[in-house]
Image (cartoon, rainbow over all chains, first blue to last red; front, side):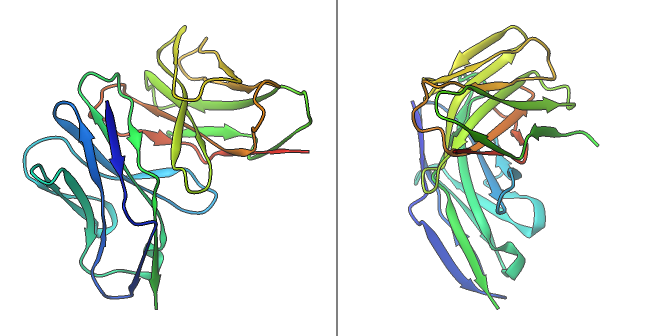
Length: 114
Length: 113
């Protein structure tokens, strides 16, 4: 069984400030972790993934995420937020024997204010 | 450009009517997926297919049906048995391995008349 939790429904930050969107997971076995972004009335866009190796993963649009095995977390970060980063963010988890299926969190709405 | 195309963007269903949502991909992906998105509930898996002529139920398959006759196409039928079909439906595809991301279409919004 696998699950993922995004403990914050909403995150508000000021433009130029660092942002963090939190994600914790539960999976039997080694996890594969993903972040996606969704803009209104659009599909999800892939941002970055952790498979193995370096715990700090860099992705699109200046985003990065840190894998922490002991805390079973995979928080999304960006050093300096832009107003255009405002969107709905989803964390997802899969593992090696689940046929490519991912389990998605409920999403976190990020609002960046000018 | 390669991608996933969902049509129509908006769809209206009358009571007791079946409707079919189209999903086509030209990414040469083996696996395809259908999700339902409701506000505040994230994505829930309806059906998925790892290979042509084969598909499996996801977490909320009741009231839905699919087919996978071609690699490129994975249509979803919302039947009259689905009592609460109003939602945003997303189709995705991937190479099929668990360490690969999914690529999504831009969705179909289904409403009841």
